[in-house]
Every structure is written in structure tokens, then in C-alpha cells.
Image (cartoon, rainbow, N blue to C red; front, side, top):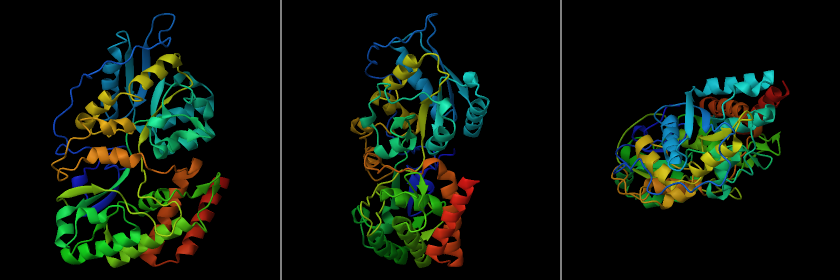
Amino acid sequence: MKKKNVAALMAAALTASMLAGCGSSASSAAASTPAESAPAESVAESEAETTTADGDETLTVWAWDPNFNIYALKQAEALYQKDHPNFKLNIEENVYSDIETKLITAATSEDYSTLPDIFLMQDYSYHKMVANFPGIYTDLTDSGLDWDKFSGGKLADSTVDGHHYGLPFDNGASVMAVRSDMIENAGLTVEDFKDLTWSEFEEKAQKVVDANGVPMLTSSGGSELIIEMMQSAGASPVVDGEVKIADNAALKEALTVYKDMVDKGILAAADQSGKWAIVNMPKLDGIDGATNYANCGGASWAVSSNCKNTELAFDFLKSTFGSSVELYDDLLPNAGAISSYLPAADSEVYNQPSEFYGGQTVYKDIVEFAGQVPAFDCGAYYSDVRSALTDAVTNVVQNNADIDSEMQNAQDTVEFNIAG
């Protein structure tokens, strides 16, 4: 997936942690000084039996993006080798579509011998893949990982029926990046845009639009923003495994807000650079449990059923991506990977002020936002739901279609696709 630099967004943008659909991107202007590649503290000595009978301590991993995910793997390998000098990762680069195709091929042929020990999977694929091809995975629930140290919203993507199948990697927290200079032109401050409801946001955003002559918010696609709005309210288009798009109060409110912002010229789809700050997203009005936090996109590490040494795989993941602040301190400035491991927010690296964002400790704030994201579950139907909602948003905005009718059409479309 391509990483988006926040500086390419317009006056304010709801983004997947400044990255479209696959974790986070840190601007080079935002990172003050690179962290030392070698961690300050060594990994604790493992008590697990991590060596096979023939002494092999090699794990094969599938991942994509050499500058992001694969860089992270290499740094994790070096970290783990400090206490396990014979350990080695055999990293095989695959684009994500190829990884999913290989997983499905192995499952349908019931020949899992082609699978690696560990693989990276996009978060929104987990429920679909676990439901259809459960034989691919090794259950991570009792692997020794401390699940409480990760965002509940992020964990929900790879947790099925109470069982964990993925270790969260990159941070997908939704943020609103605002142009501080344009806000000030309207006689407002960045603080005025924190902890808002959407109706409060619209009122203040209209002042910014009037003062600057440009839209306040940009959107790369309606359905993504709609889904984020729903998640922030703890709502979902799938409830207990059943599609619930029609007669969904949170979805109707989200569509209503979206259409209203387009009509008022608050929302657009252009790009513009400038002076920036990060705040949390507005919450839906009149919806019980609504919050100012959501998550969009990202990926997690899975252990395959073909793993020959699960104790080694568990210990490697637990000692690196599952607990090492030092690792995440390296990945932030050097790979642009923002941690989904919540304790990272307390590190010196994450607390460095960013000149690009007006001295704000933006990465600390993003991790803290992630810790407050409600769990969200589209089940195995995320792609179907998103496609149907894209059509609904298009019809509502461009054709002035009735919102209730479009919600029912989306419900019927998803149910038809599932039945087929």
C-alpha cells in the first residue's frame, strides 16, 4: 500500500493514521532525530524451548513493502539475535494480493506445507479468512502475548470468537489533521477543534470555509469515512454475524452528516499543503456510546498452521513486536511505522515535539487515540459492506437519493452477495 504524507492533505483530513489502509507514515519533518538502531536494553532471556531437535532457529516470513514492513522485520531480527545468536529470519517479499492468493490456494488444496511460519495480513481480511479457511492459522490466544497492551479497536480486527489470530503491528488510528493557519484566519484555534461532535465541527468548519474560501475537510472516498464514523460510535453494519445496514441509526447519522458537509462545501477531494496540527475526530450526535476515536486499516502478524516451531515463533513475536518499545522507537523515525503497542507512547522518541506539527507530540497523541478506539467487527463481509456503502454514498451525494432507501439497497446488495 502507498503511504500518504499528511502534508498532501487539505485543511483537515480524516486518515488511517496518516496512511491509507496500511498502518502509518511519519513525515521526515516530524521526526527530530533517528533512534539508535540497536536497542538500549536487551531482550529478556527466553525460557521457551525455541530450538528444534536439529538446532535450527530459522523462521520464514511473508510480508510486503521493503521500506516499511520488511525493514521492521529486519530490525526485529537483529533485536532478537542479541539473546538468540543462531536465530534467523528468512524473509520472502510478496505483494499482499499474492499472499492472500497463496493462503487460499493452500487451504483449498488442504496442503499447508507451502505456507511460511509467519505472515503479515491486512487487518480487514482476518474475519473473512478465518471464517472460510481456519486451517491456515495457529491460534495465538495462549501464546504468552499481553493483549491488554494493544488497542481494543485494533485487536478486534484479528480476533474471532474470542480467539486471537494476529499480533497488531502498525497503528491505524484515525486522526484529523487541521491547517492551523486557516483556522486562525477564522478567529479560531486548534483547541476549538478537539473533542467535538459532528454538528459542532460543521458549525466551526463553516467559519473556516468562509474565511479562507476553501473546503475544510478532504475525503479520499465516502465509504471509508462513513465506516470510521460508525466505528467511533461503537456501531457496525454487521451485528452478531447478521447484516444490519438498513435501520442502522449510526449509519444514517453518518450519511446525513456526510451529505450535509458536501452540500455546504465543507467536504471536498482536493489536495493542499500547509501548516498542520493533529486532533481527534468528531463524534456522531445523538448516538449512545459515540466517541471521538476510530481505526482504519493496518496489518497484523499471523502464525501459520505450517509453523514447525511455534514456541520460537511465539517467543520471537512476544519479544519484539509484542513488547519492545526499543524496536518501535527505531521504526518510527526510520520506517514511519507508528506503534500499535500502547506503552510506546511513553517513550522519549514518541514524546519528541514535532516542528512540522507546531511542536505537538503528535505520535504520542496518535498512540493514545488508538487506545480509545471502540471495537468494530464487520465479520467476514467487510469488502461487501464497503462496496455497497460506496454506492450508497455516491447516490446520496451525487443524485440526492433518499438515505433510508440507499441503506436498504445496500442491505439487500450485501445479503444477496453473501447468499450467492
